[in-house]
Length: 170
Image (cartoon, rainbow, N blue to C red; front, side):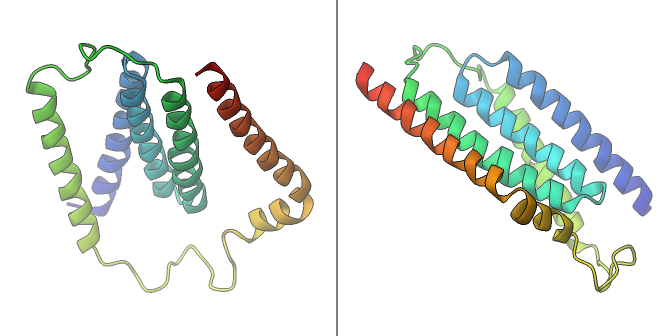
């Protein structure tokens, strides 16, 4: 298989998986299941960013969206205690479970194939003396440090307010 074919196949695979996962996310009745499909969408988008040589954006996609935002979302879902009856289920029968197993095995095979490929010691498109993250971190931690910190404090206040409101209801 030529390298271009593998790249194109993986690009369309991750793109299609992201679109399908987003559609499934919107149609789920269970909020936790929907959140897991959203995490799958975020990981597929991160893979697409990495394939387009935007490694920093891909890493931020995983850390911020698939990590932090989904933790906050699941925290709010658990805090609200929606209490859906146990009859509401997204997986009925053995078909979805078999599909999930096959999809997992395909993804595992892709990871093993990519892990066996040899990467060059030096990446030709990236000069040695530059750092990808330097322009982003310079502006974030110098010019926009105060707005960045104010945003983090506001998020903390929102979480504390949600806990206080939930305890008052219960």
